[in-house]
Image (cartoon, rainbow, N blue to C red; front, side):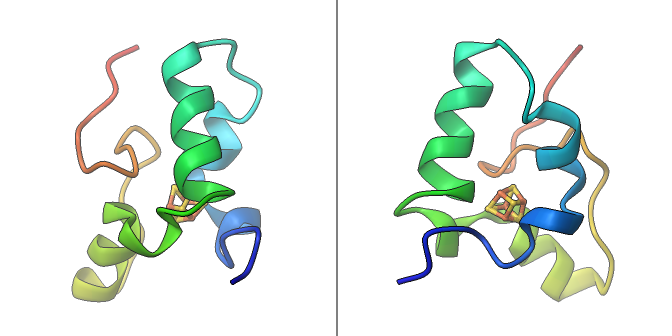
Length: 67
Ligand code: SF4
């Protein structure tokens, strides 16, 4: 299994939140973007369905982040 999501470089969520100090963001990144739940990412699902990426504030869980 890949150790990093193949969309990491272009993913709006990752780009925006990779430097975040928020524990929630760190957990999501380590579970989804660089971890075992990568294939379950809702952003990927959205992209496949809609042909375009969701905005950066949609989390890999499908919930929305509020700044
Ligand atoms: S949020 Fe989803 S699509 Fe984006 S890098 Fe993480 S696992 Fe990949």
